[in-house]
Each structure stands twice: as structure tokens, then as C-alpha cells.
Amino acid sequence: NVEIIHADILSLILSLTKLSFPHLNDVKAYKVVANLPYYISSPVIQKFLYGEFRPERMVLLLQKEVAQRICAKPPRMSLLAVSVQYAADPKIVAFVKRGSFWPAPKVDSAILRITPKKSVPPKKEVEEFFRVARAGFSNPRKQILGNLSTGLRVERITMEKILKDAGISFSRRAETLSVAEWASLATSCGNLSET
Figure: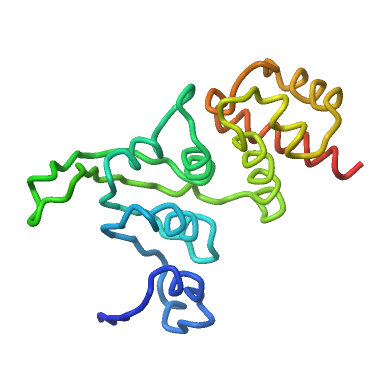
């Protein structure tokens, strides 16, 4: 019951649908277990979390700092943390010292368990969420009002009202906002573009 596929994981995920792999029609659930290189960890995680055929769990060995960034809470959020936590609950279950490997890498690692939420919002909502979050994090050291107003091309006074209605201070920075606050902003900005 094992099929070994020698392929580039990023290309494989793009084609990982029940249409391209008909035998997946009998699969009710699956898990992802991987040792991911730093440079592809973010795209691989996001493609699984937001793809058509989502896993029930991911257990990943990642660079320690990357795992910590994914699990961060305000005021240390990043776009990576927001994007993972919007669709899943990540948790570091153990740290692995570099000396556990041979040859030893230059960094320590962490075992990260990612449990996807039962469902993700519709595609349109996800796209709006990321549009707003990317604008907010465009200049992480700058205040959220300026980033959103410039990045979303919304008049400053309009963005002030959106932030005020959401109970978010104009002077806050993107890293201090929770996932729930980003979702609220995305809804408000989405409603704005529809009017």
C-alpha cells in the first residue's frame, strides 16, 4: 500500500488533487510528516493548508527559529505566523539540538505539529485576508494605518474609520495584531471594496 513518488514537493502539491491521483478518492484523511528545508518551509506549509486536499495533521522538522516564528503571538507576529494560524493551530512539541544529526547543521531544529482547522473560509475571503495582511506587513516597522492606507490604496480617513471601528489604535504595528484582528480588518476592507 505504498507508492513512492520521486518528485519536487512544490510541484507535487500543486497537482495533489483527487482528479490527478484517482486512488486518493478512497483516502478519508492523511498526515504530512517531513523534514523541510528552510527555504521551502513556508510555501509547502501554505500549499497544504490552503489546498483542495488538506491533511488532518502535519508534523514537521524545521529550523528552530522558523518554528518559533510560526507559533509566535502578538507582539511578535509575522506574516508567516498569521498565514499559518489563520488556517491551523501550530505547536512546538520538541526541540532537537544540532548535535543530534551527522553531519551537524549550523542551527538547532524543532518538531512542529500543525493541526489544520476543520475548514478554511471561502477562497474570496482567504484572498482578501492575505491582501490586507500583506499590506499591513509591507513595512513592519511602520504604523498599521500608513501601511494599510498605502498598500490597499484607501484614503487615510477611510482607513482611520475602519481601524477605529475595529478597536485598533492607528499607531500599532502589524506584529502586534492578532489573527482575529486581521480577519476583522479583512472583512471591513472587503466590504469597502464591494460598495
